[in-house]
Image (cartoon, rainbow, N blue to C red):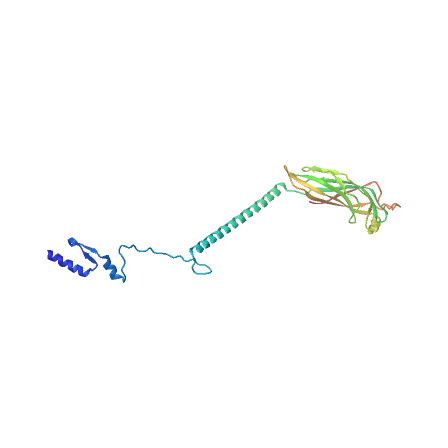
Length: 282
């Protein structure tokens, strides 16, 4: 039996040169023999293999590869650009939402309150003087009756610094008369009787010929203007001041009144009913 075992070991050694014989008929792998048979150079079997190194290549506009620091800066810049775009979009969305809410609030307030301009009427005109005793100088005295109504149900109006005066042929012929400040509540109606006058007011030369034409026609057209500032009151909230203008054109039909030596056109101390609606702008 021993001879047969020795024979088998010898045959195994012939076919497997990379194994070493050991005692008690065992065998072990000869690492140096196997590595030498497969490589042209020898290395120590106890030296650990070198770790595999990986290189990262970053694309840029200048070269195909960049140092790691440049790559990190590129990634950071790209990330910052994305954050900046998101921030701009967020700010734009906030501004858009704010504008939408403001417009929606204005629309709701307008739908609920339905603000309307006040209405003004020129009820009558009492003429005390309207003559041109001296060429290019006009004297006129009028007593006016003006009514105002606030058509709003939820909005009050504060009238500040109202001035009333008369215009003839695009020229102011009276001084400004001030109407005291007052508050006009919801659906309220107010009436004033301001007195406007101008003594020896210088006018353009063509006014004399225009007066003669109106005397022959038996009618006189003047424009009563009201200028000032108003404030709106909604509940306890009061707005700022807004410019207020009212134009009240009126035609006074005095008929065929004979011309006097003093140059008067109409009969004095006569009240003319006109009831003319005024054009109001705020």
